[in-house]
Amino acid sequence: GQNIDQPTEMTATEGAIVQINCTYQTSGFNGLFWYQQHAGEAPTFLSYNVLDGLEEKGRFSSFLSRSKGYSYLLLKELQMKDSASYLCAVMDSNYQLIWGAGTKLIIKP
Amino acid sequence: IAGITQAPTSQILAAGRRMTLRCTQDMRHNAMYWYRQDLGLGLRLIHYSNTAGTTGKGEVPDGYSVSRANTDDFPLTLASAVPSQTSVYFCASSETGTDTQYFGPGTRLTVL
Image (cartoon, rainbow over all chains, first blue to last red):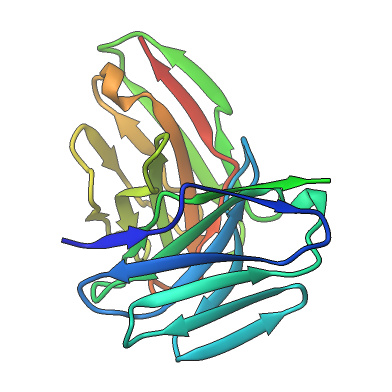
């Protein structure tokens, strides 16, 4: 079966750095997406990786290793507004997104 | 309008009733999707449409139907609602079936 694993919850301090991991087993791979979802709101797109390596976008970076079935989202200089759930999703061989359950990130002052 | 709108925002429905959730996008995206999101689970695809006039089944299609008469609208119908369909429903769209998906604000549905 297809599976996306990510930690259920993480806690970090304002101003610090946090890394949210995602491992996947899917039938085929056509890219990995990270979304941010604040409580009660819609998911919003953060990043997309299809080749191995690091993609940097401001305070957020996303890394992919296809051989290891592994990705991480790195958030730097954490702000209180970064408190949200972070969703990892893989596009499989049928071009359908398979979603992880999300990681709830709690930022403490 | 900019993006995707969904209606209603929330609804409480008696079991056995018929309900249509509406979704409209103004980005001229070809592909549209319906997901449900339940606590502790990832988003699950119900139905999708890669272009107007075509639809396909996702991971959890039973009890739901969709239509895609034009590019902008993609309604989701529950023919006879059951309590297990209590969930938050998100509509999404993408330029094509392989591109980044953008989400509407969601509909919170409770079936009693």
